[in-house]
Length: 298
Image (cartoon, rainbow, N blue to C red; front, side):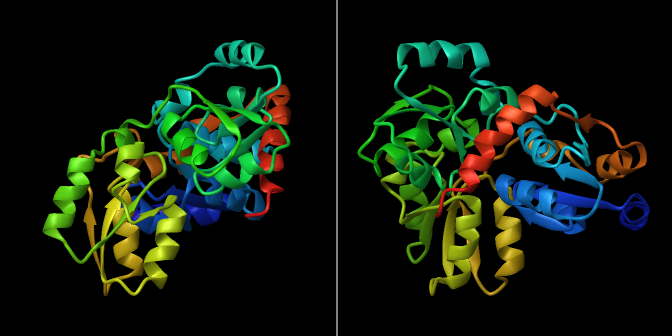
């Protein structure tokens, strides 16, 4: 199957992008593995005309927004991010009416329609810098309440959060951190900013998945407890075979990320379906929010 995928990829002039949370076999066949923004930026930069995006819906949408001339395929139509759908454009407009002087900062883990209603996007890596780059003293931060709480700790601006969350990261508990430390007392604890504040308080470092990768490669530590979706550990082990990695919880699994497999990647290359596209008017407004984010220096 891998041979078929590689041959068809060449024939289609396609590139396979895989998120850090994908299953190992999909990560292995991908041309690039990374976080959602890394992959979308790569999609816009690469010459290939077909992008097979192994992730969830909002990631493929972002790639389609940044590369409208390319064919973007999401191998599993039902691979979606629950948090991205926890706020609708109508709900956001209602919130804006309550706080007319506030800027709207939209986490990239959101739908294209919500991005289109926002002033600027952010990632888990640059949320603080994005918020601090704004002139507004009030900031509506959507849709993740935990990332909003993390950003609020690092800014003097008033953060107005939406009550959305990632079910994987929101389920981590301080007790799990303490238990993991007891099992691995020499390990550094790295958690994602989508975790709850009381979990972040127990960690040594807070990073996006890309940040975790950079930290691990440069750290003198030999052991790490990883507080994000378990798929991240495969990449960390692959890139740092001399170090040891332990999941904060074996239950930290995004079911939608795990829906993609080699068979579905092959079918996507064969059929170029399911294709992801964004209506032109929505894409144009969403792209402004994304591009404004990209202008912020980190």
